[in-house]
Image (cartoon, rainbow, N blue to C red):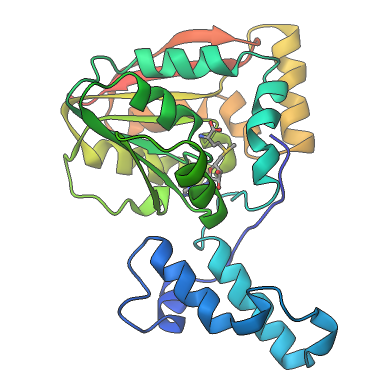
Length: 277
Ligand SMILES: C[S@@+](CC[C@H](N)C(=O)[O-])C[C@H]1O[C@@H](n2cnc3c(N)ncnc32)[C@H](O)[C@@H]1O
């Protein structure tokens, strides 16, 4: 998916220090509003940048950057959010709905379950899971505050909750989910983060819990090879590792079992399913 890169190199501890007030750091959007209120008039975009002195300008730009996403080496999407859902539909040649449907079906049954959607973006897969639940909860997490804000407004449902959080540092206890899903997220993180997120998935899953990841995998057609290559040249460099089979390998290395592809489309996209023993 075409997007603006937003790699924040600031360690999480620095971010916490900047928001030393106890209400600020709580891993959800209250922290962001606090940071925005600290950024003052620029945050509400009342003052043109030209009216700011250089030092204030730099400081406020930093505040806004902190406010928009949590610090991660993953590629966080903070721009073009309103066009994102359309972009996914077009970018996947109309196959996105089927991809989300198969990801949801890979973790059935859903009634009464607690499900986590990692890198939920605007909530497309979260909403698909929530739609299939008569009871239960699905929590979508993302490192982008604008994504979470949009998901809360556009893809809200009684069963769905959205939270600002890092995939590599999930703010949930061990064995607290029946299933973990994720779509189009793993090609936004580098090899090291893929491994860390896979370990987090294994940690938060209950024994017997299921996982389903929809993303680029090793291509099996010429179209798939071209499509994936387009992905890593024009979108995310990290697509390349997916294409070498890194996602399934990370899940297996994290101790998940029965890792296999359940659905394939576009010559390089698949739902990878697995479970915790
Ligand atoms: C291509 S989008 C996929 C969104 C959604 N799952 C979908 O299918 O449309 C990838 C998402 O991963 C998020 N992301 C990137 N790095 C992250 C990280 N370390 N922790 C949490 N979210 C992250 C981005 O902000 C973005 O919303």
